[in-house]
Image (cartoon, rainbow, N blue to C red; front, top):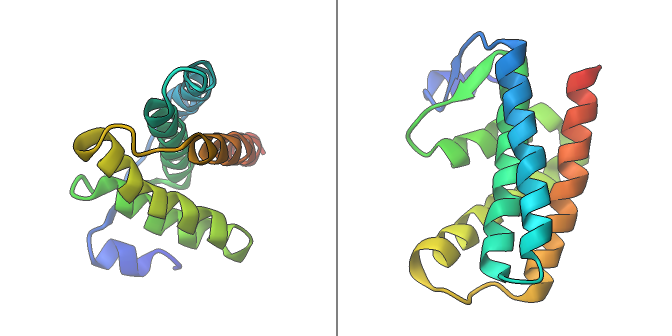
Length: 141
């Protein structure tokens, strides 16, 4: 199974999740996208963080749909490790981008206000919108 290494290292766990829970995660991703769009003209750090969260929620919905959840410790990192395997080479660069942005988001939220540029905020928001759309389409199949 393609997820064996993540299961053995306890980075992910098998879990049955209801369609309702999957839908709630997707709804949150959509809400986060709308919020990030509103914030774009006001605060680039928070636009970035909320767009990132949209990606995280969509990724979690996808994991749930596959019957898995990330381990609590380093859950964001574990989620993106799962998504690398789940989405394959077609999405490898995009998932790697989101994983790199995980670190930048932590810095922007916890360490240094004003770290994110307008270009970075716009970039992650555009990529997040596309990614959430793909995940929604795949989960509706």
